[in-house]
Image (cartoon, rainbow, N blue to C red; front, side, top):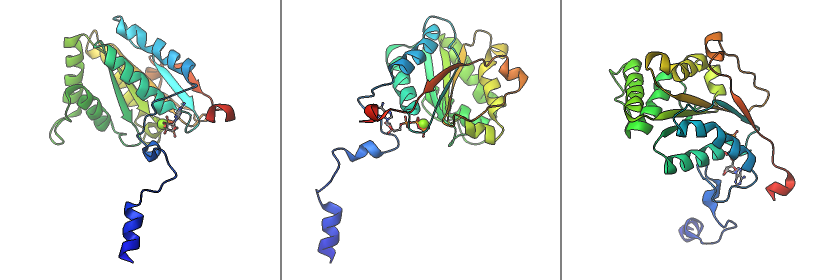
Length: 213
Ligand SMILES: Nc1ncnc2c1ncn2[C@@H]1O[C@H](COP(=O)(O)OP(=O)(O)OP(=O)(O)O)[C@@H](O)[C@H]1O
Ligand SMILES: [Mg+2]
């Protein structure tokens, strides 16, 4: 009996060439059929590499159309090639409060999370913006599965915090990539946000049978 159980645990037999490809955080080496979307994302980021600000965008498409993968790929490319633009990725399903989202951005910039207790939001926010200003860097924040911020009614405040940073910190150059998997999802933004968030729409169509093959 125990020998059989051990065989199951330790057996070498498998149907899969690379079972890690099924892990949620797996990033494929070969990412095909998304050239036009990757180009559109690159065009949104380019101004920020030249001293301007990133172009805001909404990335839309059904589940499993490669949106998250595209963002990871393009962010990795930018950060590997330029010091001028900080690319922070936030999974809004996991982080959906103002404090948690800016803690993620803080961690990306400073390499450690801010202390959990006793630090007000405004301090974290200020430190992020000051550091970017000191180093002359722009910031783009990818809010993946941003629909979760609408359920928790935090979307307007967080977009406002990111996009109107220049009002409190002159020279701040910030942008947002909002990623939504539900195409039917209609997002409602307050006037003070919609005046600064006029996003470029980048659509991820479902893959064709041929592409999937
Ligand atoms: N063009 C592609 N080539 C190879 N693998 C891909 C491609 N597109 C997607 N995948 C793989 O399919 C899975 C789903 O992709 P991804 O998570 O990027 O989709 P998504 O659009 O973000 O989905 P969701 O809306 O559910 O978050 C991942 O494992 C990803 O690596
Ligand atoms: Mg995704």
